[in-house]
Amino acid sequence: MIDPADVFLREARESLDGAESEATDGRFNNCANRCYYACYQAAVAALMQAGVRTPGTRGQWSHEYVPAQFAGLLIQRRKLYPSSLRDASARTRAMRQIADYEDKMIPREQAERLVRRAREFVDAVAQRSRGST
Image (cartoon, rainbow, N blue to C red; front, side, top):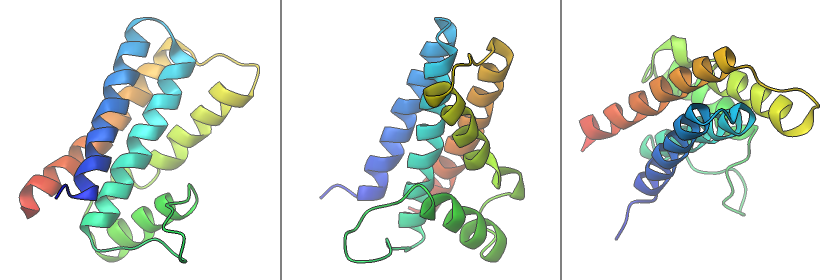
């Protein structure tokens, strides 16, 4: 049986690969979108690995719940991840909001920073995942 946390981590890697490709090809708004989802999917994987379950009965990971639990529970309370990752989801989400819903373009430099940040986030979750198996 496939571990659902592993599936989310693979999805995070795929989103990160997509972000890097989009940045290389000059599609910086789509890059921002993929960076956000890389962090979101990695955070879901981290929460699952830590035994956290979705609230309610529907089994869905909301875009408000995931970053709040990652920062509050896994960073602040359990100290499983470095505090430098605390705002990664919020920053990538803010850039995704601009890219997807505003009449602005994400500049190359910002996209490159987002990719570095998302890579740091996904790598931290992947490293912890390898260490726990």
